[in-house]
Image (tube, rainbow over all chains, first blue to last red; front, side, top):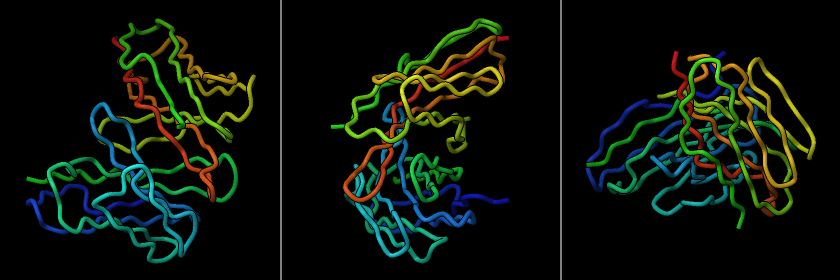
Length: 113
Length: 112
């Protein structure tokens, strides 16, 4: 009964390094999302994938890329990390149709020095 | 631009002291309002979905209500285990799919 699984849970990077955050869901959901959460800013949408094979930009996409690998997996890549990208990153998924709630992973805590 | 505002930002209550959290929104084409609970170090956990004005949902000590411009999360006789951040999100059409916009949350602390 895993739900949404994110890896890694913690990561420290140096400025300019790259990395990929992984997300997998086992609920057969069509839609997947990546958010960042910063103190006082709430959850902000980075990218989303309404269905397998599609991705769209959210509110704060600059500096990030995503890949919807298959229906289960949605990854977030930082090509050249910057200190401003220090944050907690959450992946979420939701089913098809109106009023489907999102199910969240427990986050990746990323620090960029 | 769609906006979701939650108030207060922080709330401290004594155990048993009932209160309400507010979520006001300006969204075109609202298709659902959600309440989530977030514990420290965890992802948000779904509580309620409200769709139409006048609708109410209840779960244990929590009751959510919806009007055309705002939603309230009423907490009756809270316990320390109700301490968490409560997030509100509204879902609106974004020209291809329904996308949620989150408020910044209300941090609730219930003292024993």
